[in-house]
Each structure stands twice: as structure tokens, then as C-alpha cells.
Length: 89
Image 1 (cartoon, one colour):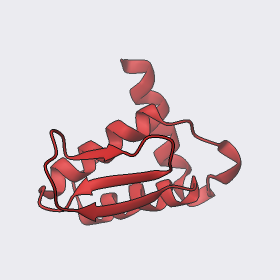
Image 2: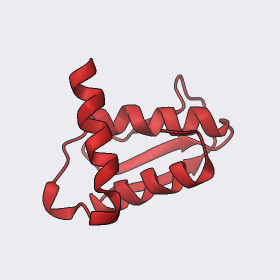
Image 3: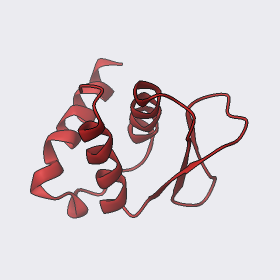
Image 4: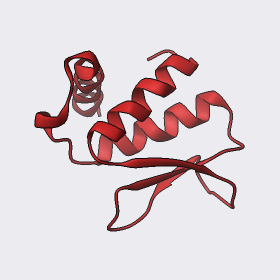
């Protein structure tokens, strides 16, 4: 996935379709983002550059359970990339 603002928007939209909220906050992060335990909130370091934001969200996306029922046709290619990434690991 290219590191563009459009890619970031698609990943954010994918999270939204899955019932997650993506928030951009300042704070002391060891990584570019984190997921709050037992919630569907992902917090991204707002001071990270675009590449780090995308990589951080992508890594979280690899770890969350994805409900196929809520994936729109428009965002299905992202799901396919997630599957490829998971099998490559």
C-alpha cells in the first residue's frame, strides 16, 4: 500500500466500517499508534509522519478481528491486502 493521504483515509474508513474509532492525539507513544484495551478505539500519535501513521494503523489492522459482513465493496481490496500480509508473516 502506498504511503499517501488517500491510503490513510481508506484505512481509517475500513476501521470505521468495522466499528472502530480512530483518534489522533498527542502523548508519549512507543509506537505510532495503540488500541485501547476492551474498546474499539485506536489512538494514533498526531505528530507522527504519514508513513508511520499508515504503518501503525496497518499493524493494528493485522491484529484485530475483521467482520466480513461490514466490509464495503469499495474497501474489499484492503481486506485482501490484510490477508496477504497475514499469510506472509
